[in-house]
Length: 261
Image (cartoon, rainbow, N blue to C red; front, side, top):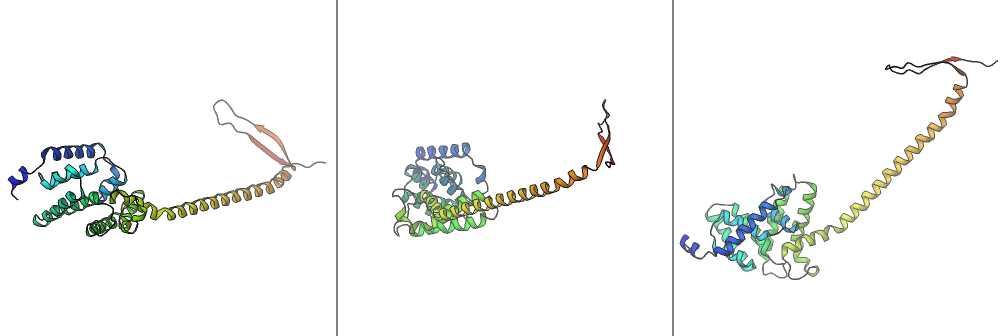
């Protein structure tokens, strides 16, 4: 297909609207914690965070790297599965023919956003392709990402991997990306609850230990108090001195041995 054919077949109104909407959404809703993430994981977190105009953001990115791409306009117009997979295939093709590996991640992002929840083998290979890309990106990122972000990524990545076996738990009509986070949360539900119980038990045990230590110290002080009082009975205070007028006040008690007759 020639460049002229590309331009003639380009749905300018639909593409322009999606591009401007996506660019505006990225500009006004930038999340600093997603900075530095691989593109695929960034879009996974946008879905998890229920960000607005996620597909349009991707359309805008594709338009920046592959201007006037008709398949991008077709997907922007309907955001359907078939149009999305055609666009992903074209991006894969250009990644090879133009020696642009960066386009591979765009293709995987399109699949991530357009694929339905897998209930048969219709889109199995595309699901597996995205799953492997998610796992590899997560392994490379988890070494330096924040703990909270790692938890969110873990839920999504392994929730996506478990989707084919969990379809009975999922509502029909939702996309694979929408359901991946739900499955991931269910997978970790009991582990999180067990960790919370263990943390509460540890905190309670530590509180009891401190309380026991405080009681032991209080008992020691009460045992020593009679000895101090007994020693004080054998001494007599004979003088108290106090210096004022701006100087450090000194209250000195000179104690001398005293014996009663």
